[in-house]
Image 1 (cartoon, one colour):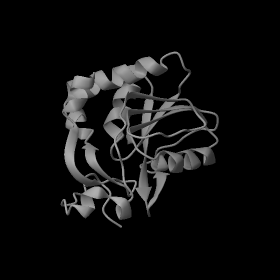
Image 2: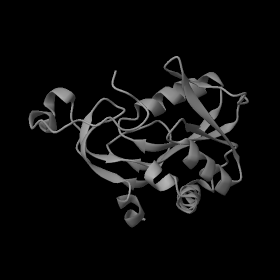
Image 3: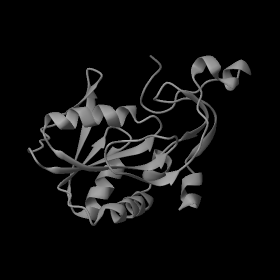
Length: 182
């Protein structure tokens, strides 16, 4: 499995969605753009949760949509996603959740867990039961009140911008992903 992940790890100087800087960036879509690999990753994640009673897989747009779909396919469950509207996550496109539904929350990469914590606050408004949280990659040390499982954990240094050694060396900063610098 680690061999597959190597294709998605980029080296440089990156601004992460969390606001931190890093020498490494995991571009999940480098893997998920290939249907066979996406399917394989979805099946691997689903194996970690197939004994849990799940009604719906909820992922975060944009990075988690393909993975969430593949996890849902492997579990034979419904898939919906949260997307940002006015800078906050919400259910759009006619997606609905019923009170008491059991939810598996899916994201591609977790660094600080900020987006997932925001998603949890949104999901609580629907009075669903969060069964667990899952991701392709954990690149830090995050704790949640719910079971949290990932396919891969990497200890990759991240830096506050004011303490970034890459900035001090004038390494050009790249802004990957869907969030732009604030």
